[in-house]
Image 1 (cartoon, one colour):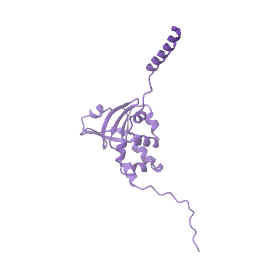
Image 2 (cartoon, helix red, strand yellow):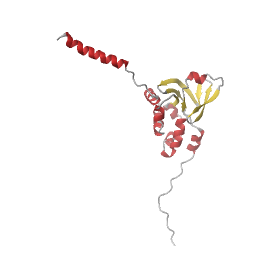
Image 3 (cartoon, helix red, strand yellow):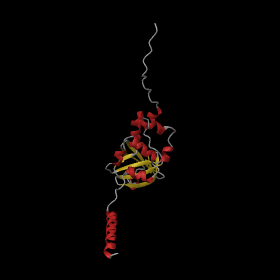
Length: 188
């Protein structure tokens, strides 16, 4: 076998390997980062059902206070099922939005203010941040901070943030649908 026949495939393979190593890989957005990290299937399902996946894949920066599957397990029994009912989509959207802040809020920025308690704006209203025995977002303790995504930051929290309006709505039964049966005629 000639030397040229051996060299040509080797050079081609080397060129392909070098090209592949310098071609930047697509960075993971917040949704992909959470999916790759694992432990967020309940949150990601809620995001999809709320119709907010495109928002979390969109241009950032944004910060997601991401409750883990364990955090969803701490909700009162049946809460997630109620939220996933089509008639309660508005409450599900409000709950998911309460976890999303526009802008970069790395832990260092959240810990910087002199006040031990303050609020930051989220898509669902103000979120209380506390610095006492660690960093708190609402009732959730930040258990892992500053998980980087290409369009923002994820802070893992150990509680689901349930806005008061969502909790109040969940406490009420859904109205019964109007009956489709024809009214009974009176005998007479």
